[in-house]
Image 1: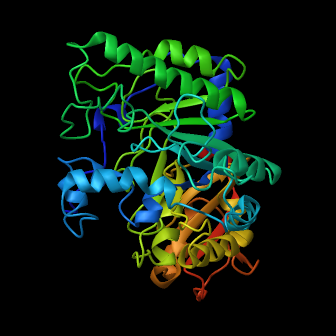
Image 2 (image 1 turned 180 degrees about the vertical axis):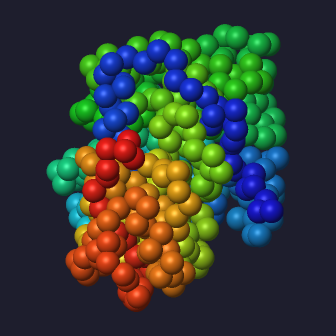
Length: 441
């Protein structure tokens, strides 16, 4: 059994929750979302400069993040030096247009960007905190690219990709969450909101203000992706989500709100982290999987083999889900070469087989067959790992079709005639297509 990482917030009950009433605009947007299939999520911030597991080392109780190399020996020193990283983080090679070009070529259809991680450092031009790339003590603040989220939004919108904003609900730099002078031991607020309702009200307003400005200042957004699942899940840490939703959807009623792992009406789709669920969720869903071991940039990180990424993509799509692949940009603003290499291989594969991925929906047959299937507009697509495919597997397909096409080379196989040879393709997957019979509906 693989041990679950301690940064993963999980709610298996919410993963199998069905929809309640949804506005028509949201229903239509969810159909759009399920057509996209493959996206990218960027974790980028001060933690790239430190080269550590995002901002988790700031949380004293989350010692798992420091076990394989604490950035500083003492937690007080670590926090002091981390908060000052805005004076060192200087991404002079940041080129959002290059990111967008690489992601478009990789076959990604939408993008999610960290506007703010748990450390509270804003990668956009917030007016409600000085702890941001565009102001305060940030060395990069006068650079025209300092509003990193704005740069990314413009560049990705230019190439036609959907736009998502990641936002951490907790904020360890906010004086309304980790109150100065109080001892913040873990990821939670430094106080019990039930005992200090006025302080929590200030934090609730702070979050509301930031989410409102993100929704108003960057043009139409497709997804608002809210992380930090312990907020809104207990410990008396509850935001006024009704008010927040009303404000962020004021001018874009179809905005998908993803209050991760919380369930209910503001988790418009569910997001299994670092895994493929054993049972497909009832709601629309999106597995999120980093290309490397970590979400953010860590020097000498371990990247997954392309074949592992490809198998995850195919399995998730055949189960009816989306997948976002995580990329951690470097502190200089460039994308790591190993990530670009995987993205290049994925783009090349999708240029040939993308018709079997995008805008598809899962389909199952009563017969036991060796392929995993999806369908789109009456055409069925099937995937099987080439090295495992046998002649019998192909002959069994005669139960559902009399003729099929191999997308690998365009050849046609007529199953109404006796077949004695199983084609062997060099590609990892053998991909087929055939027309769905009405009796298979």
